[in-house]
Image (tube, helix red, strand yellow):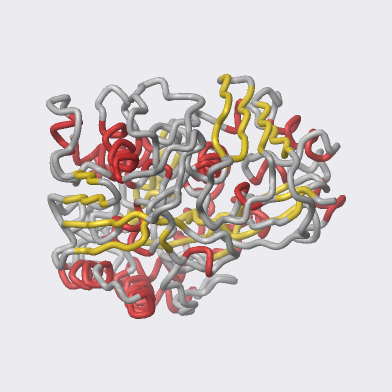
Length: 543
């Protein structure tokens, strides 16, 4: 069961998991001022403690308060996804990718004036590993040497995390080629070495990023102020943020921004596009205040390659990819405002993405689909899982209609779980014998090709267990080799080739669309960098 929980956490499809860059523009403004943020309870601000926060509003705020070993630049995509050093002045990686040694930059200080040492990062990791904290981020640290002892309550610190002055050494039980990207997540945010662990989360505490949380009253208010000792290079403009957590409904939150009573707030795209609010007719899209950009979440069909229908049957998986009308399916997810059709496993802008034109995006290719399906339909019966929310049900019914055209009889089974629930993905992993196709969302926590291709399809990443149960020793070997390529251009080229190869020849998935993110701001907000939501750390207010 421990592997199943690990898989569910890695596959968690909460769209809130990523706050990293996608696109941006805007007008520069004055220095100083307080940005007013409005969040409804439904917006999902859970914690301001980096060990526990796991929602998009939480990560947006933490991105402004955190200092991390590695980070992503405050730039539009695709430059936004190029990992760079923040507190790390340099690093060494062992040949087997099991030992990372970081040297820290001087000059970083917490908001109380104390210097940031390696112990700040050691404490961040050990806090997340405490069993009573139950941190979602522990999944990204469980392969550290000694982490299991901490998770089991046998030790307070992991033996594989060693901090000496400005040097941090992290050792792993197995190769960890994605660890640099992991350190850009809030779970690895520098915290004071004496900051206690808490299952309820710590509120106000010193931070080493551009800002720090000065006050947190759950369900009421967050006050964030500028760090007077900030020693990094991010271009900071504001004096801070006043976050009101009592907006009422998500629509009330949007109306407050529309009236100029608040400057920004996070919600799902469907709320901003609610016709009763009339935002599109008022402001148009991507002009001044209302922005729609491709995000980091993929909506896809996973094929269960352990079942008789799809086992050793790539032609049928390819046939389904040709039979799908992705443009029509997009209408079930909000249309062109809600997403952008895709046939690849890497979203637009991610390192390694290259438009390979594998399957049709504007309709189906039924002659090609029928030709591939002929002689490969086997039983012709498909058990399809989906959640019981309206958009998912509509998409599943449309898939059923489209696949009937190539001779497949699809039975849609509704799972009574929210579409963003990790429990749904865990159910797919633990009940693999019951489904052939599953409609899922995939939103990794880091915008890196490893999080899309390796975590989805590398058979040895989780002891041979993947969402699709796809098995290919050759593909797994090449995925591991791509992950261990350190030269940026060569790594991107390797992943671009694998992205196209896997989609075209093996087809363990059928991606439908990239889900868009919507940002709505007041007319006071300038210095816009959308990542895909607003980059708060470098935002400003207009004159």
